[in-house]
Length: 137
Image 1 (cartoon, helix red, strand yellow):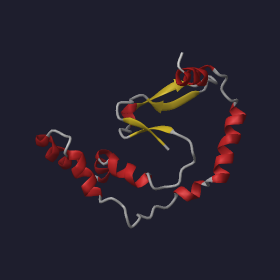
Image 2 (cartoon, one colour; image 1 turned 90 degrees about the vertical axis):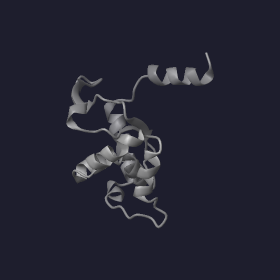
Image 3 (cartoon, one colour; image 1 turned 180 degrees about the vertical axis):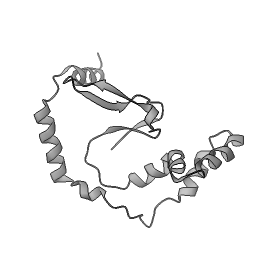
Image 4 (cartoon, one colour; image 1 turned 60 degrees about the horizontal axis):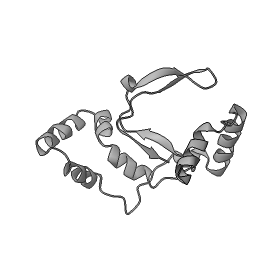
């Protein structure tokens, strides 16, 4: 077995930290990077133009469908944000990070959630549609 495959397997077969250990780790991260640091956003001088980001995306899309996409995005601020995940990702890329990686989803609406059982046998509300997700800080 390759070393990286063995490490990945060990990650999934090693005992998980206890709930109290996970809570302590989260509190330690909040000491390092308080939540308040995420409360404000000031666009940097070198912020990519949001329209340019959308135009770049349009280059890889079916040309006849691009106007339909833009029309749907114009319907409401929520619709715009739903169609502009790349703009949000570009903005978030310059914000403080904790060092944790999550599976971030650009298609977050109520129909893409469900109720599941956690490892501790608690009910949790979580995402069930991973077709538009990427790992992110």
